[in-house]
Length: 234
Ligand SMILES: *Cc1c(COP(=O)(O)O)cnc(C)c1O
Image (cartoon, rainbow, N blue to C red; front, side, top):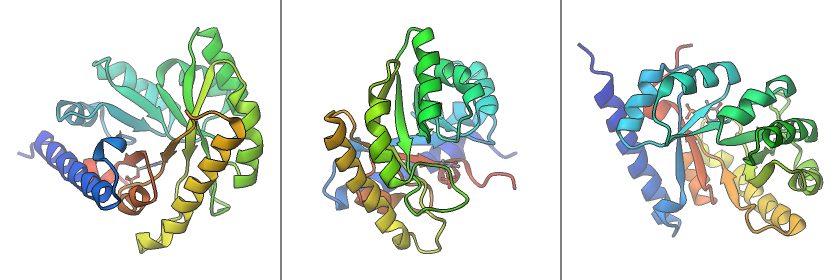
C-alpha cells in the first residue's frame, strides 16, 4: 500500500533543505524565507500530512476550494494564503478565511477586500500582484500601475500592504526568470519608498521549478506545490 504521509514529509524536508541552501548561498538567513505549501487540487489529507511534518503556511488559488479545505482542515494555527486571482463577489470569504492575500491585482479588488475585512473587524495582510513580464495570460498590475496604486491601497482601512507578488514566466531554464525576480525586488524598494512604510518588504516569488533563483533575488515567501505534494492531476 502507498503510504501518502511519508512522501510528503520527505519531500517537505527536501524542499526545506533546498530553500536553506539557496538562502545561505545568497548570504541570507534560511529563516527569512517562508515556505508556503500550495495544496491546490490536493485533498485536505495532504495538507494535514504537511502540517504534521511542520508546515504552517498553506496556499490555495481558488476561493471555493480553499474555503472548503480550510473548514475541513482542523488545526487553527495554520495560515492560509490566497495566491490566485480574486473576484469582487468573493471578497467576503477571502477576507474571512484567509490570513494573507497575495494576488491583489486591481484597486477595485483591494477596496472590496478592505470593505469586507473592516466589516469583520479585522485588518488583512495583502500583497500586490505584478505582471512583471507583461504576459497576456496573467493577472497583475503593470509595474508602473503597482507603483501608482500602492499609495491609494495602502491608505485603505482593513488592509495592510506587506509586499509584492509575482508569477514568473514558465521557462525551461529557471535562470531565465532571474530578471523578473530582480525587477520585482527593485520595484518593491520603489513602492516602499513611495508609501513610506517599512512594512512593505515581502516578496512572494518562486515556485517548485524556480525557487532557488527567486531566493537568490530576495524572495521572502516562496509558494511550493509540486515539489511537496507531487504532480497535480492534469
Ligand atoms: C500552483 C501555484 C504555485 C505552486 O506551483 P508549483 O509549480 O506546484 O510549485 C505557486 N503560485 C501560484 C500562484 C500557483 O497558482
